Image (cartoon, rainbow, N blue to C red; front, side, top):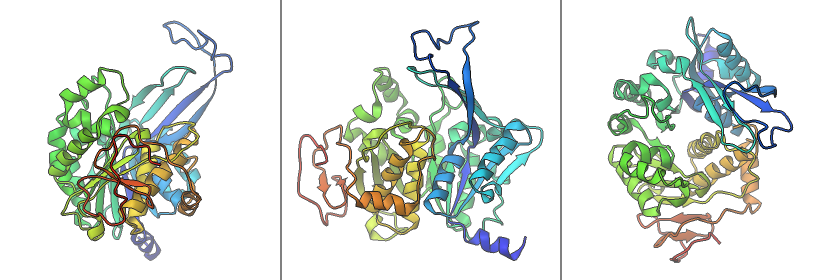
Length: 410
């Protein structure tokens, strides 16, 4: 390795590792909006327009968003030497050539791809091939080249067979290795499909093995309800409601406490249009006392929603960018939901992401927030930060002493 290569590796802020794929999205022709115009029935032929190709998965979405926000990023994933593998590398290279350097290209395997069937007026259908994501392991990470990297982020273990089939031993070992390299560690999850091996895996056991090596755990509310409270999740999900909108604040708080007890330093739950919830342990000391024993809930910003694919991944990118800049928890959460709002204003996951300076400028311009959709009794509104502080929050400084039965964020 050249000296310049060592310097480049040492300058990396974040290694984004895990699941990567190619999304193939056929465009439905004009007129398919008519009743029966795009009915998916056996034996039928439906004409489509040109297909759109883009990279997908946590490595692509979170990694490219961090790159656009100005972070120095190294992407680490695995593809094959087939068509979809070559396409993955080409699409990443179109963003920036350096983004392909950590992607392993194995021989004779099948690269991951997803066919997104999205007829107008109906929910999307995903046909997903996990491919090389299932065989990814710690051996596919060049730890020597990543020396000096500040932070390690891993995404989507439920969509990677090797990360859950052994009860989480491989996942825990990889996170432990990142810690041993001197990196702080974050982990994102994904919702496995019903009826799959991943759906029936012992996720409580897997998380108990992995979370002691995780500083920042960034799953969605729905994923955690399914993984550590399956019976309750099945009951709630059977109602056909949006769980992020209907689950009580007390349930969110109880879930976060349960995850902290498994060993992670901080839980950041993604709640869709309901915002972002943070709960840190009293032992969390990576950024000083202001991060210790905190409980915050950030409403989302108002946005012109064009698509929500990858919005959670981009929200994570915003959180990690603020955290690595050394910002406090309120500013970091505000930046996270702002980046998520930029994402949903574009059809693709990262097409709407701008620089961190552009995000901050829009926040500072007086960008309005969405109202909260649930009561938050005994929570306190921080007017200057635009964030709610919970009953367990250790920092009472700067709060407005307001308690109410209904909260609208104004």
